Image (cartoon, rainbow, N blue to C red; front, side, top):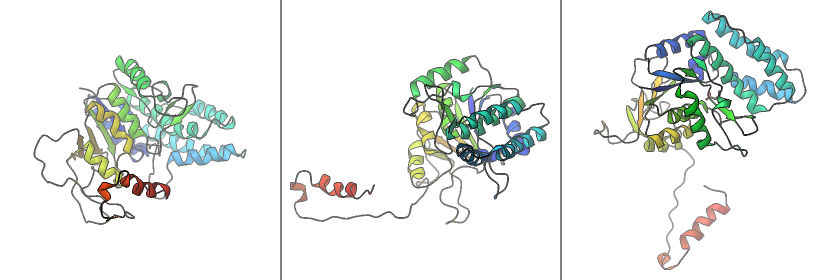
Amino acid sequence: MKKVVKFGGSSLANAEQFQKVADIIRADEARRYVIPSAPGKRFSSDIKVTDMLYECYDIAESGKKFTAKLDKIKERYNEIIKGLGLELSLDDEFQVIHENFEKKAGSNYAASRGEYLNGIIMANYLGYEFVDAAEVIFFDENGNFDEVKTDKKLADRLKDTEKAVVPGFYGAKPDGSVKTFSRGGSDVTGSIVAKAIQADLYENWTDVSGFLVTDPRIIENPEVIETITYRELRELAYMGATVLHEDAIFPVRKAEIPINIKNTNAPQEKGTLIVAHTCHKPKYTITGIAGKKGFAAINIEKDMMNAEIGFGRKVLGIFEENDIS
Ligand code: ASP
């Protein structure tokens, strides 16, 4: 049994959260491949490390002094290392990052360091091997994800690796430069790793106990969706359900690997299971309800429109001309 487990930023925001994560991983031998995000917010007014990195890099790029900002980021990691009681120093890593910021290595490189450093801490804490995502996740020269190359490299690299930490969110282009997915992209990395190693399950650990049947800002105490198909989830995600990155569905969907959304702060809860097909009779006919504002339905009536070839295209062309999806 092989499980890929991805932990979001709030699950890794401080040492206490790291400990919860380690307990979860150690509770199940099958949790062999771990995908960490960068440290997220510790409290609501806090700043995510990824955002701190983007800001720090902007300053570096404009040629101004950025050392104080980078030190603040280092403090976040040192707080975690100290809280976990680890014999680990990231001084050399920060030296390299400082040099690369001076050399203007790019904002993708800058942002990726959040996951990279968290991965080093996580691997050290768990005693798992650290596998840099830049060695196993690939993009082509235009920045599009290279599925074929990645699948092969990942499968080869992890074949004989019993347990590993692969940082989320980034990979490398053919020239070796770092490229990130869009924001929240560690979910995508988890899904890609799960597919490449043909995992039995992809667990996505976050700070909610799964997808809710509807928006809790509108309906009080909605139930958690126990099981949902990839297809239903696409619809809900398109309509604004944001628990999982939209693109995280495609890799595992192809391989029919289920995703289990779980809560790091309430691991006993079942969460939501995302599957290819539901074989049992679902509890409810309607799985979930989501909505978006600013939609319009347009009803067109005209005699004989079925006799005119290309009528539909002409009508829809008006939307295109006016930049309406
Ligand atoms: N750390 C990145 C972000 O804040 C990626 C992720 O968390 O998945 O977007």
